[in-house]
Length: 81
Image 1: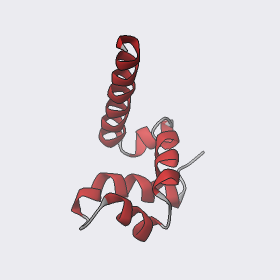
Image 2 (image 1 turned 60 degrees about the horizontal axis):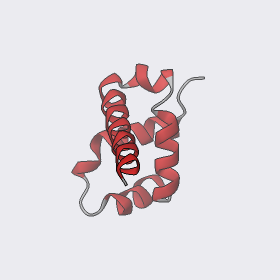
Image 3 (image 1 turned 120 degrees about the vertical axis):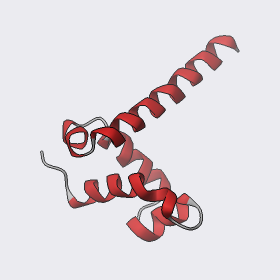
Image 4 (image 1 turned 30 degrees about the vertical axis):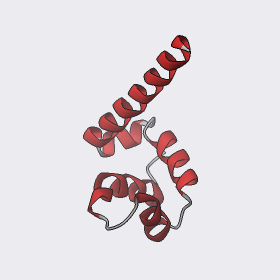
């Protein structure tokens, strides 16, 4: 399925969010009209799609690497403790 307008908006926001003044969570609410929890749910699903990868391969690759690194760190912490 092609990306929706909301999907493209989420990817664009994630690519540009550091340019927003204030906290990211506030910008998510004001710019996208989403709660931060919902935003991160949608983003997590979105970066696993072929369409998002084709739309912005650099961004999606970076976000996947960050997610995987966080997951690996959690797994390692739980194995140690």
